[in-house]
Image (cartoon, rainbow, N blue to C red):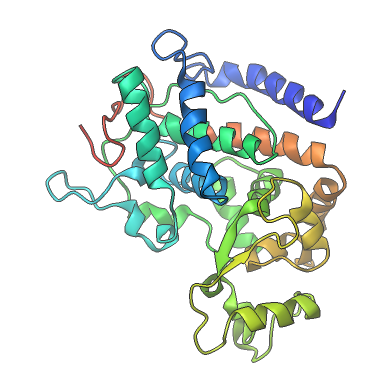
Amino acid sequence: MSSFSVATIVLIIIVIMFGASTAQLSPTFYATTCPNIFNIVSQVVGQARVNDARLGAKIIRVHFHDCFVNGCDGSLLLDDSAADGIQSEKSAPPNLSTAGYEVIDNIKTALENACPGFVSCADIVALASQILVTMDGGPTWVVPLGRRDSTTANRAGTTAIPGPFETLTQIEAKYIVQGLDATDLVASSGAHTFGRARCATFSQRLFNFNNTGSPDTTIDPTYLQTLQQNCHQEDPGNTLNNLDPTTPDAFDNNYYTILQNNRGLLQTDQVLFSTADRPDVAAIVNQFACSQDAFFTAFGQFMISMGNLNPLTGTNGQIRISCRSIN
């Protein structure tokens, strides 16, 4: 049996065991109301992915940033609306570089045409994330469905989203608040295996780290020279850099090998391996570097756990007709 198959079986078992505590969500929630939901979402994202290799990274980031603020309720998708008293979370600093909203709109349109009024935007993001990770070579997991959409946004609450300049202690504290642990933190960071980051998010590491006048000593010297050439000290700019320079568009465990070689791009990447007083966290990095199967299983479990953060169910919230505005 392949490692991929083993990981898939383990994740299915996790869903069954997890179901007792999340009874209101179910993988078969749309079995009668929108039975073709998986095929419809797959078709839309598959077409969009042809022209955008970064789509998987974009959508999963939207899912993460949405769930860490008031739970997985689609609040991040709402645009500003003075009439509805909504100040969009999109305009908050942690979300200024989020993208992929047009594809989410296209999925919503396709689902409204097929089964109007049944599928929430929150569920669209959760399901699209799983499908795109699998399309890019990553694991699959069974997505519990049945979330409803919020009727409000929480721009101030975006401070709950981990930032690129934070220490391991600061990041871990934000995970603990959500009921997530160190394994979840290291596994979820593996999503950087197929993403990009702008120079402005890590240039402080290259020239004057923590006001020392010198680069971050945890960066491999050869890699440092490459990054300094890509990002100018005076004007770092918006140049995109691969978070995984070796297999930038594939979802694999190479991200962890990169950390072992001191080539983590963001400060929040490298601290997982190079924080001196946290050998327990470095040990998880080593585990995932040695076993892609272990990483895939842990990543799928994290996505299920994160996707179940405070979902709106039953009569709470609504099923938005447009993901950008309330009904």
